[in-house]
Image (cartoon, rainbow, N blue to C red; front, side, top):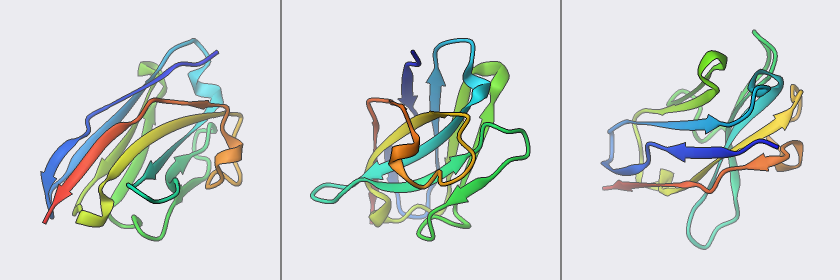
Length: 126
């Protein structure tokens, strides 16, 4: 069982930055791929970014965030991060982190993840 807790959301002006954190419980964090998904009001959940469980493994970004967002992980701290720069109003959403055991391919699909956090709100004002 893995429990995920997101933090770091908030209100920011367009062009600003935020760093989201996803703290995971358990001793096996290093064996999980980590992903970030987001859901805006009235829209379906969509993929944002993901990182493989393997050191030096695959990293995925949605086209909408590529070049602005950076995903990373610190296995010693059982934490994944999403650095978000040059934020736009259309980035406003609840952001969820997710964990998928031994995930390496297809990490842009929600079905690859077994565990999900409760989400953190990100609001970007224009």
